[in-house]
Image 1 (cartoon, one colour):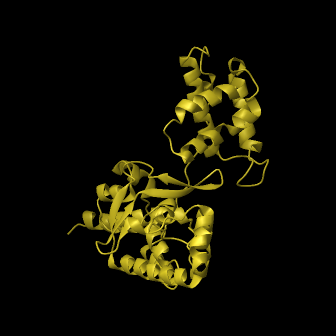
Image 2 (tube, one colour):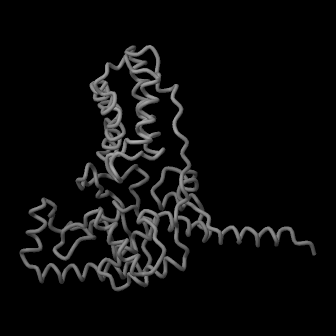
Length: 327
């Protein structure tokens, strides 16, 4: 079984980003553990059912207490990947039928995203006004992904033209930081910047110049040791020695700043959902929001990233009242 999964992954992940390849590999880890040594042709529907039950009750290895159950979403992902692999094996004549297709995936309902209101966004930005990475928090609340913010280089930003170009991302893959191209052709995009963001980026660049001068040779040495230093093409979001911020540190720092601001807790990625939702509430067309977010179509943006709050429902009530008002 494991040997065939290796063969399947060669074609299934060809030309994919490193993070996508890692996702495929991770999805097959429970399969390898429970069924990896079995001949491919010996796997039955009952074997796959037992795999699903084990994953739901005791399959967790990380991101929680080991030995507890995985979420339905993770199980569905593994089952989907396994079904595709078995379908390929059947097409190749290595299996008579795809038994994975007979197994019903566990029910999964996507939880509602927590997004901030306009007032909460302003509260957070006021709390972040004196933070060294104030510009970074502005960019995260500009709708950029974490990897996109951390992948920005000063060569991607034109402060005179007031534009920012997303070309790449710095992401975690197998616990290592990697630089990857944009998720898709749509992900590579140039966004106009408002005056406040330009001012924040200008202040950060001046601050980094002072830090570089104060650190002297230690500034470049820290980068050179990590193999990240390219003169004239430094990253925008770094520490005081010019070392690019680690993705997990950036998320943790967001949480610490959020706590100091006294706001209700949301995840860093929820700031992206917040931005796109607020743009929609402000009347920005979905076609523009989708292009801004770097998505492939407006329907995906609307379905996944735009959320309505209870206050938004009250707006619906007021609108219906006006519509149905009898003179």
